[in-house]
Image 1 (tube, rainbow, N blue to C red):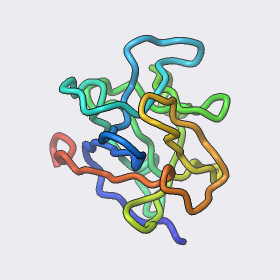
Image 2: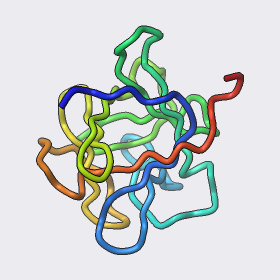
Image 3: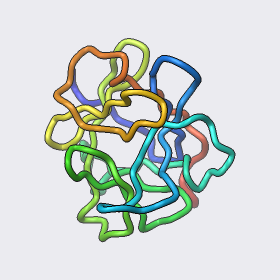
Length: 148
């Protein structure tokens, strides 16, 4: 499927996994490549669960970058086929596109790998895309970016 545009803004990203609802969450403790990004139950701390999705470049059709909403320098990076959040230069952040799938969206890395949530509490991994429920996500728009 062709990529779809996403309105720049602050989002909560919900995983489609069996069991209680889960959201994309930055863990509190950094390890090897930064803080692991997992799926976890709704947590009232927006610093860990609200994400900015915005174009990587100010040109039409640009892929998107994702960062923590309350920490401007903390972007998503990819290492060892897993997602991490780290305070690194924006050029090192991972780039993503979004495709419509049954029940939500599929989030794809710039290498064409899909984000997958195995179970609540698992670190999000990148896999070759398949029609898999655990590769489906819901983007909950919270608010526009400041100044928009």
